[in-house]
Length: 293
Image (cartoon, rainbow, N blue to C red; front, side, top):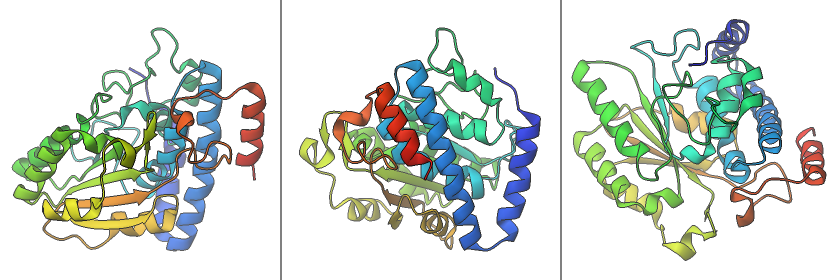
C-alpha cells in the first residue's frame, strides 16, 4: 500500500480552506489551473508507460479535480477515516486520471506515478483499493461501480452516518442493465446522500454511444427512476461546483456532465481513436505545448 505524501497533503488541506473561504469564481479559476497540471501529469504517465486511456482521462479530469479539490470531505493523511465522503470511479479504465489527481492532493508521492502500469506496480490499469490510498473499491468491469456505490450509500444511512457517496460513470457504461437496477434501488430508498456523475462525452470504445445503443433522453430516464437531475458543462469548474453543491432534497442526485473526450488537446478532442491511443513523441510534444497555454 502506498503511503501519504505529508507535505503535499498539508498543501492540499490549506488549498481546501482557501477555496472554501474565497469566492466561487476564485475557486473555479484555481481548480482550472490544477486540472491543466493534472492533464500534463497524466500525459507524461501514459507516454512513459506506453498505454492508458488518455482520451477518457482528459474527459473526466475536470470532474475529479472539482470533487477532490472543493467538494469531498476527505483527508489524505487519514484515507480510511470512518466519517469520510466516498468517491467511486466506476469507469475504472480512467485510473490514470484518478492516480494523477490523488498524487496531486497528497494521497501518495508523485514519484510513484513513474511506475504507472509497470509489472507489480500498485498503479495498474484499474484502481485497487488494497494498494492505493483514496481508492474506495476496485473497478473496471462496466456496470460494477455504481451498484457498489448504492450499497455504500445505503450502509451509511443504516449506520446513521452523514458521509456522502459520489460515483463517476462513463456514459457508454450506462448500456449495462445493472446500472439501471442500481438507479431504481437508489430512487426507491431515496438515497439523498448519493450523487451519480455521468461523464457524458458521447463516445465509447469504437463508436459513438448513440450509434451503439441510444441513451437519450438520458435526463428523463434518470428522473423516471426518482432522481434529481442537474446538467452542466463538465469542463466548467464553476458550473460543476454549483451542480455538486446545490440544495439537497430527499432524492439522489444525478449530475450529467457534458464533456469532450480528449479535452484540452485539439487533435484528440471528440475523436474515438483516442479512447486508449498512446501519443507519439511528436504528438506528445504538441499536446504539452497546448496544455501549457
